[in-house]
Image (cartoon, rainbow, N blue to C red; front, top):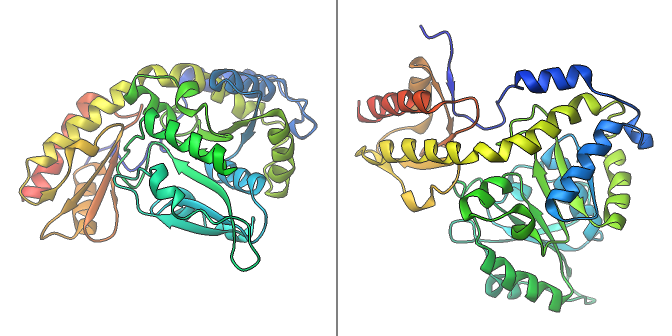
Length: 344
């Protein structure tokens, strides 16, 4: 029986490094609700600087960051345009309706990518007989599409059209550093046209807790109100922000390793007769594939007995996610286990 599992369920399962633990123990703290936690303040200033923004806000989760942004940009009774399998639609507990009183207007995007041509067709201007469009919310990389990235030229067309339409834009950039690495650009350049951007410290960057919302000074000032309304005022949060600072500086430098490990896994399963996978979608650290003639849930259960943890997406699809806590050697071992189970 294995004593240590190879955990490919998500990049949220990573454990803080020794450097993070030391920084957390030594963190200078204060009451962040009063704006007096110096470590949180440093993290927020650094995040804003990296993204070329005026200000940033530290929040406990990516869901909270996204939902604060939706509330910032909308009024009750409006629509939010999003991709049909986006995180804000499928994985945030219907909070755009519960908290912001908005209706999602979902559009299917090829590989999770929306274009301005698609978006412009569903924009509803203010009227007296139909809910108007309040916000466009996009996702990069796209989780449920298998970690696919939206290239900058597509965004440039969207930003131009949104400005002309007077439409606010928000990016769910939970894994936007992965996207920037895959595209060979910076997060500041890739996100420069969005009004607000949310990104996670606790996914590929490796922090134990936290996300950041970046935007204008005025937007982040209002965002603090909504963070408090959602229970996100964390007081002496510097013990968490200290790990976030290390993640923000060090995490992006090694994401290419996760991408290479994901490609290794994808190419291994692609050779199996029972697998359906489009290798062109394996662009970052997520591998999503279908299974033919097998129950994905049973495959996942069998893999667990062989020391590999992963996720089933219903009966016919499986997701693998690489991260800092799985090495190339472990991914090679996981690939062998996957082939045994899928071919067995």
